[in-house]
Image (cartoon, rainbow, N blue to C red; front, side, top):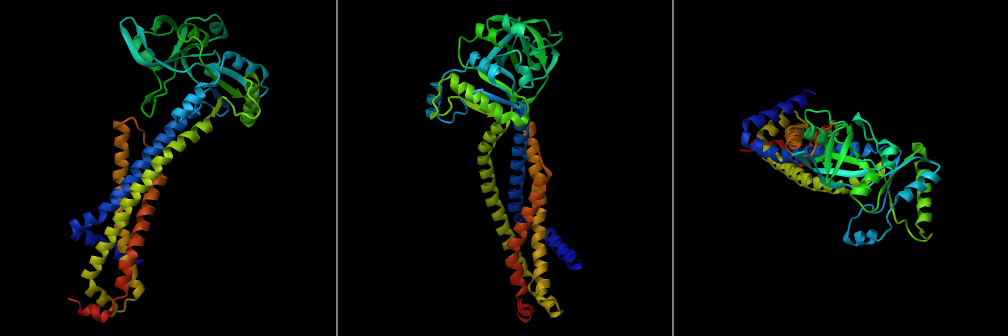
Length: 407
């Protein structure tokens, strides 16, 4: 143990005595570890943010959609030819699906401007939903109430708005019961949703929803809907999806040999889709950080070789006084490990700071995890040991007589 501490002291003394060399020695390691920590922290933050948003859908809820995930122009032209999903499809699932507890629907989103007198807020996501949508999609109401079946049946001009709409258009007034203008039509506010913040810079609080029948009356003549289904329990999700699939295939006259002309989404499947997109970021991270770390390791090896050459007489004296090969080997190996760990710790500090700067100055979230810090230390340690072996072995194999003669 004494030898370990002595080797660490020698490594630190070398850093202090040769400041420029120390900076060049640590630079590659610092950049490599800094890149790993910063990128991993941003990706972790994105994963947390997206998983929380997707988790709001609920573990027992799935969505049936006409289009699904479109990744090419060819696929887009193909899915456009599919039949629209209709309220009759929704009603058929509601009536005949044994494992479906609640069945609702929503229109597709539209970005619109909402006004109150001369005040207005743009980029508001507006859509129509069935009266039970809020319960299925777990949207929380902070003030007021949600829609009733009567609101939908009578196509009432009522709406539930996001907190941003309420705060911008009714800053000093209770918005419940107030009127606002969506497009060319007036609506009465009956509820305000709870704040949800933003996801990857996308505001989740600037929205307004109306009864689906009202939305169809004012904004949409026909068009496909999204069907939301809540299963009776999580263990019956597959059965509920199979039943819904069979009902829709029968209604839409899909042949046995043909694939579904609609798509299913669950919170798990949407998370899988997101993870498939982030794999590219991980590959870039591995490539960039690997190059930086290898460069840092090569620099450490070269500096250690210079150090071995400079301390040839010291090695000869230590061997003449009884130091064994393994003692010399461990001395230089611990020095290389010390250098790489110091570089790793500095890189962790810079990487964490960069991640926080990114989170505060851009829409991207970040989350510095303990495991990423531990990984950074382990990577720098492995690099130090791997690239420190050759210089250490060179020092250990020196002939003591030739070493003492070295000038």
